[in-house]
Structure formats: structure tokens, C-alpha cells
Image (cartoon, rainbow, N blue to C red):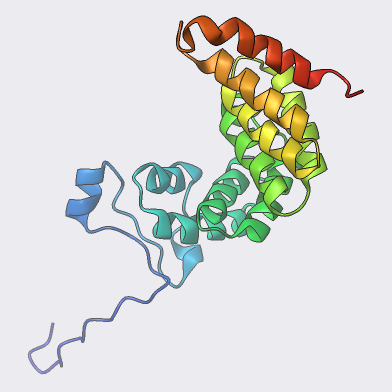
Length: 202
């Protein structure tokens, strides 16, 4: 720097900037990257965006995931991250667009459990409960040993006006997920009540 040069003022970081200090990044096990206002100059990967979510840095994750989904509209993992970010922020009508996009692109097997639960729940929350029932019922058929599917299916069934089936589904979920002897001698009786709820009403 020339002696006569004026010191360069420190630029205030804008609200669109992301990124921990090097110390915070190291402590969180994250790379010390950031997104500036010129997003194209510092591309972000799905791995970096996911790391923000797993580190609990949800505001930063939402901003980065939204940008990445716009930048890579055919990347299913980018759409999934944007769906999770918007969902967590209570922005279901934004999240559902990303869920729909990811579903059409084809969700990888390793992502399906969390994705289908989130997608099914959000479908119900935006008034598409019949789609939620179909999605979660198919998820159970394909992967019957994951109790969250049944729990969220029960909520969707309630929303489409099937309270008896919803109660039976939730009861079955509880019986399947309970530790041995959790219901003591009442397990058989509860199972009978569950089957009774599924019988056609006279």
C-alpha cells in the first residue's frame, strides 16, 4: 500500500451473506466458505448446504438451500435440502414446490424415509391430504418396518375424514413400536380393538 493511500473502509456484510468465522467453521467441522451478494462467484455444493442443516445453522441453511435449488433445478438433493429448509421455517407452500420437484426427479433410496415423512406431512398441511394418504400408504407397502410412516398416515387419514381407520393405524403404530410388554397384559386386547376399528361399520 502506498503511504498516501487512504485506508480501505471495512465493508459491512449484507444480510444475504453466509458463513462462519474460520474459528466457528473449524469448531463445527464445516468448511470456511461463505456466500456473498455475487452468488455465482462462490458456488455452494449440496454437501456444504447439508452440513449447515446438520450443524443446526438453520437460517443460513435456508438461504443457501434456496439459492442452490434455483441454481440446480434438476438436482434432486438440492431440491430436497430446499424442501427441508422451507418446511422447518413453517413455509409449507414454498416447501411443497421443492418436495414435488424432488419427487418427480426420483428420490434416492438413502433419502426416502425422511423425505416421504416430510413430503406426506406437508401434503396434508397444504390441503392435499388424499395425496398424502396415497404416498404414505405406498411407503408402508414398500418399507413396512418404519413406524413414522404409519403415524403420519394416521394424521392424513383423519384429515380425509376416516377417523376410525386413523385411530386403528395409530394404535397399530404404537403396538408395533412399543418395547416388549410395554402394554403388559393388554397387548392382545388392544390388537383386537385395532382390528375391530378396521371392520366395516354396521
